[in-house]
Image (tube, rainbow, N blue to C red; front, side, top):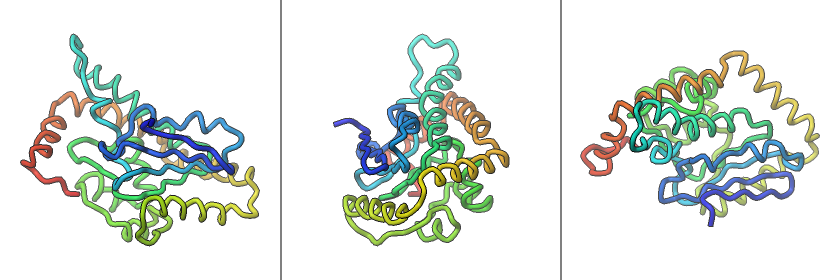
Amino acid sequence: MSKITVDVADSIATITLRRPATLNALTAEGDSTSIDTRDDVLVTVWQATGKWFCAGTDVRASGTPREGDLNLRDSFVQGIVRTTTDCGQALYSHSKILVAALNGPVMYANCIVAEGGSSVTFVNRMGLAKANEVLIWGKKKEAQELYECGFINKILPLQSTESFHAAIRAILFEELRGLDPTALLVVKRLLRAGLTEKNNPDAANLRESYAQAERFASGIPGKQFLRIARKEIKHKL
């Protein structure tokens, strides 16, 4: 089975991350741009299998220098642009109604830097104070706190992943009932344009990707990941 599957039915495109062994870390395969051009899709749902939703971009896929590379930083830039930058841009520029169905935690490793435009989007959604706590201090945030600050829209009762996915679909059908599809997408475009004028996510995404490449080139993230794997240090999650 593919690491990522895409199903389209009843105007809803469902992208399912199927890499539970890697905590559903994203690779270039997780690109949603093909869905963006489909006229039969109104809503795109990102969901996952396993106990975790996502661990960000797969550092093994984006940050492995090749033998013979003359410039270590350039090697990381090439890998990170393919994963972090492309995946991030595909998400924040997506024209459909985008729903993230979080079945479990989202991992953030504080030995790397903000990615995917989060230095802008986190501030927009949860406020500067909480964004600082997450991105600078690596503080864990529970679902209730994320709901109260407006980062997430709804918390569902504890249930199996399969039941959770079915519940999300039922909620979407109810929310979409009686609404004009074209109006929804126009409003989505206007809201995104307003946020873009406030702080361009393309610029933030590019800044973060180059900073990330320099970070990996320093060798520090690799050493920290190894220490976590050896249980020499404990991850905050």
